[in-house]
Every structure is written in C-alpha cells, then in structure tokens.
Length: 94
Image 1: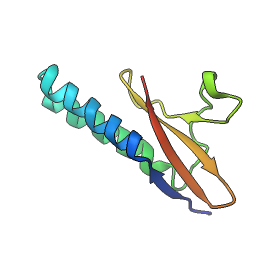
Image 2: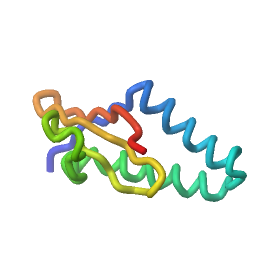
Image 3: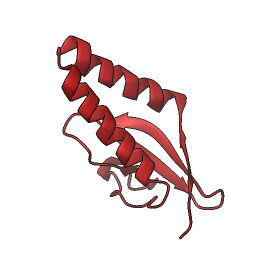
C-alpha cells in the first residue's frame, strides 16, 4: 500500500488550534475541545494511507479539494499531490 506524506499548512494549523481554543475557552467545554481535536487529528492521520478517503467538497469540485467529515463544527480540507505522494491539509472548513 502506497503511503503519502501529510503536510499541514500553517494556516490550517492555526485554524485548528483556534477552533479548539474556541470550544475549550469560549464555550467552556474543554472535554468537547479535546474530543473534537482527537477526531480532527485522526482524520488527518488517515490521509497517509487513504488520501482520497474523504469526499470532494462541493464548492471545490473543480480543484479536487477534499473535506473530512469528523464533526458538525469544522473539518479539515485537503488536496492530493500524486507526483509528490503528498497530501496537503490546507484549511479548516466550517
């Protein structure tokens, strides 16, 4: 089975941390933030072996951007580069 390298852009990383902080602090739900963050990282980790395991986001079908569905709050979006065997996590879709 081919493995892909998974790269998380600075913008996506900042958005992930901001959303976790919002859930933990603004909504005063640290356990929910931890659970959400775990689901996001599990979805990102799965991209290593299943880079196309998430559906193409409707608004980005021209570019082939895929969006994980790990929560109702916010989900990571990714793009696959087969030539470099790399998956780029590029944003957090809300």
